[in-house]
Length: 108
Image 1 (tube, rainbow, N blue to C red):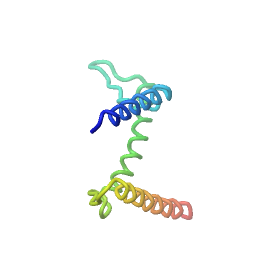
Image 2: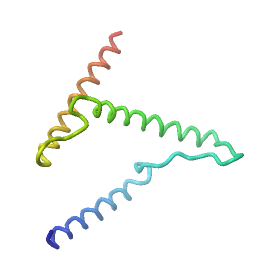
Image 3: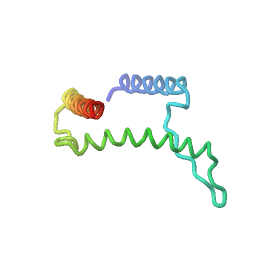
Image 4: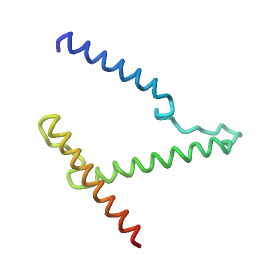
């Protein structure tokens, strides 16, 4: 690896860090808050944990569905372009299946 590409990667990483800092802490992953011994969580903190759990459950469901689908666990492609294409097609199939499920639920 030449020094020029390392400088580019470093600059890109610092730009990404600046963008994340600019977006604010609300977009970053934040852990659940825990209760201490003898001190239960306040209602506000419990509500915050519940909101985080809803988001995480929805995201994990998507990844779990894609992973258990045929060909979803291993990428057997050569090159980044083909890997991105395969992942993009898997995302497209998931979205089509999800749309069909939502339309079926709305019709019922």
